[in-house]
Amino acid sequence: MNNLNGILSQLKTKGYRLTPVRKSIIEVLLKNPSPLSINDLISQLKSKKLSPNKTTFYREISFLKDLRIVQEVEFGDGKKRYEISKSHHHHIVCIKCNMVKDVQMEKDLLIKEQEILKKMGFKSVNHSLEFFGLCSKCQ
Image 1: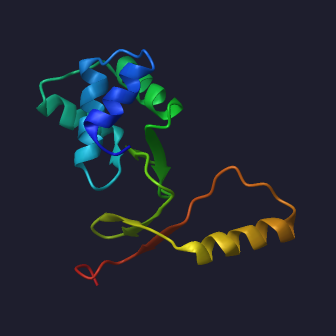
Image 2 (image 1 turned 45 degrees about the horizontal axis):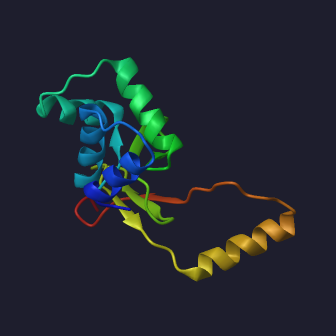
């Protein structure tokens, strides 16, 4: 579910509280097309006149991750970023301006993934595929 009312309804149906911080984190992530770092999220919450302490903030992020409402991504720089969970997708990242865009991969990648896993006798629980380079503006 990728809309605020749907996500909030899902939480309420499951008996979870709709705290202002929880609701605002979801709103901010829904409005941003790119994954956000902790600092970016906190900054945007402050612009909404919310200043949760870091413990509360991290607890909320962990809670939303556990429910698979939010997912964590990392682009090889050690910096964790967060986005609303969507259908499985990958990212394209500009190494100069830090632009990040979602990339949907068709069934060809799924077929190749299954071939690799079978050949290697490996059971995957998760994977990540990111493309790094220069966007058309930075080339």
